[in-house]
Amino acid sequence: MKEVYSMKLVAKKEKGNEFRQPVLSKDRVAHFWRNVFRNRYLYLLMLPAIVHLVMFEYSAMYGITLAFKEFHAKLGITHSPWIGFKHFEGMFTDPYFRTVLLNTIKISFGRIIFEFPMGIIIALCFNEIKSARLKKTLQTAYTFPHFLSWVIVSGVVLNFLNYNGPLNTIIDALGGERQIFMGNKKLIVPILYITDIWKESGWGSIIYIAAITGINHELYEAADLDGATSLQKIWHVTLPCIRGTILVMLTLRVGSVLNAGFDQIFNMSNSIVQQTIDILDTYIYRITFQQAPDFSYSTAVGLFKSAIGFVMVMIVNKVTQKLEGTGILD
Image 1: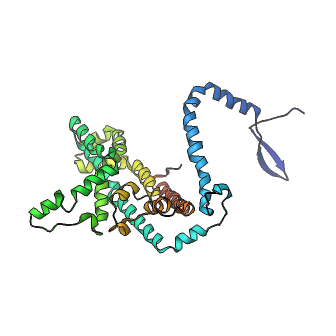
Image 2: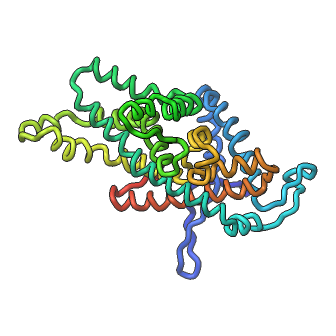
Image 3: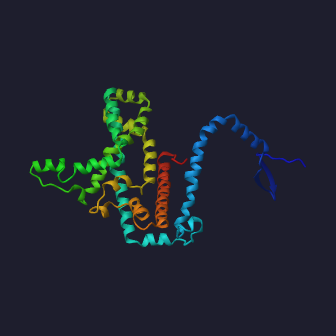
């Protein structure tokens, strides 16, 4: 009998009930390869990205099994013994892990509350500047700090806030008492927020500036005819038009809620304030590289971070669907 391969759905009836059965089609496969050949140059351009994805992303996922094993270097990942959820049990019964987790949540949500809106505010301010030259100059000035590494920024901050630094010199000249800013547990977290706002807010405003640029100017003209002030135009025209962009960026930010800024904290921390700003990333770093290496336990902590991030993205995506009718994953 002649072989029939068809992608069309073949309807069958059985005891009065209809069901559909997909059947593969040789023509469909041939069409796929013809399409690949026709667009071969585009696929060749995509090939390096695919190779990178397979080699450095998907193949690396095999290392996740370390979270459920007792890793021994001599045995390797494959032959190391399975121990189930032992590392996760140890993680949740470790009092210091709970301290680090709470620090991470506190600092990360503080960043969302204080730092996330700053990119939006800067974009709104840029939109109100009429001089193109002034706007470009300020955009360059606000964006430039992003390209400085945290090693450089931390060095500048440490020198500026040093006991004998410029700020304390001014305080002393005004009759005040010199402060050890970087050793003050009450001030260190606000210092983290302020320095991160200075460094990253200008860069974070770029996507909002692009979204504002795409707003139909007729909306602003109509608002002008109605006698709207600048603040009213921002509230009733600009913000509603970029609400979708804001929700998408918020979803992505909440998804990385357990990433509280390793580079910044690693470079600005010290033994006095370590317990106040010690986060999961610095905790993992010490376990993996500074103490007796425990790759299995650090992998378990990293997997926990990823799982929480995934759950948070799903939750915020559902909220976005309720508000906008569509989510980032739709």
